[in-house]
Image 1 (cartoon, rainbow, N blue to C red):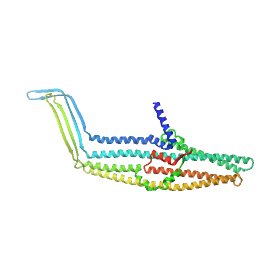
Image 2: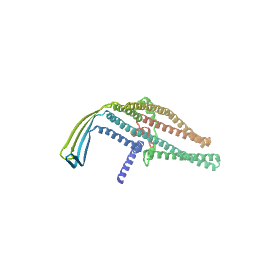
Image 3: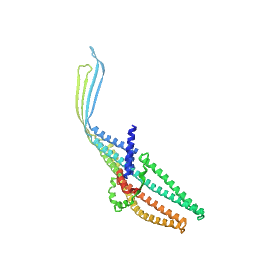
Image 4: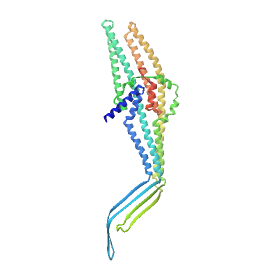
Amino acid sequence: MRTDFTFVSLSTALVLLSCTLSGGGISELCRQGTQKNPKILSLAHKTKASGYRVEQGYDRYKPQISISASGGYEKYEERYSYKSIEYSDHIYNYGATVEQAIYRPRLLKEIQSSKLKKRAAQMQKRDEEARLTTMIAQTAIERIRLERIRELNKRKVELYRKAMKQIASKFSMRLSNSAELSQAKARLQSSIAQLARTKQMIMMTDANLKLLTKMKKIPQSIFKKRYRIDRVEREFERAGIERFRKMIRENTMVRLSKLYVDIAEMDIEARRAERYPTLSMRVNYSSNRAADNTRRQNDIRGVLSVDFPFFQGGYVSDRVDEARELYLSASRDLDDRIAESEISLEKYWVQIKGGLQTYRAQKIAEKSAKTYFESMKNAYKQGLQSLTDAYIAEADYYNSIVERINSAADLLKAILNIYYIIGKADYKTIAKFEKSFLSSLSR
């Protein structure tokens, strides 16, 4: 047993490593998560149970055979005016009954309804997989963002340490005052605190990923990536929202709501079918031996039975009216789900379009901030600018980088939300997403 477990674990690790090296690390996290998630596993069992419900309907239409037998001891006495006769002996009877349903309209409707419920259970499982896939992918994007910010904070800490050494050296030579030294210490401690806070957020994000994927260890190499927003510009700049709007009905929640409407409609038909006649055939054979052992009775009967419900006191009509109202309710839920998806699509589409414009502006601002920071740093070394001005320029530069990274992460999260809305949130789509919009830091 231990050997099998070790082999499976090793195989899983090799698959995960190969996916990571090929740029499919996030998609592998999604695949692992959907396979191990308890709720999805529970829905898988419900789907199987729904399949058995369909089989139950078919089984009720198959011949129903029953066999009966009885045995015992009988003793009785017949008295006449001139004599008495006693009988006593063992008795036994046996028989068989075969019943075949020929036409049962309500049962036929229930079978069709069970098929729809099975499809609904499957769709509910797919929707939960799509939701979990979206959550894992977005959490991974957030983890990449934090990884980039952590590296940025490390650079800031190193830069401030170097600045601290320089200022401390100048202070010892009386070329700097205590205010500049205190300011340098404050900047250094602030950058250390930012780095510690980022590390804490990374630990929390890793913990969330472990909960979502049910993996004990998340390979950190998955997050050594950068965002490729240039690909987003090429793929979404000229794309129209209409092609996405046409795909809204592929949304798993919309499709599930549509199945609920179909189930409610079929329930109306099933309740109406309670008024329809039923037709069945019954064949019965029985054999009985009399207690006096002098005669035996064999009986074979074939009966064609027609049952026509004539009046139920309005019970069926009320049930039909109830089912009709439930159908109208399910229809309104479907309309609401479609409207909600359309609104969400509009929101995320605007976020992508506006985010791209913001990202372009932030790239220009980052380039300008870098140029200004470098000029202020050189000016400070030459004694032309104060340390405070250099610090402000440096802070603006790093803040512009952080803003660009945050905008890029928001853009990719919006794309993942659109994948869910159009029914494309699965690990295969995430693999394509990762290949298109993420790249290794080594590239």
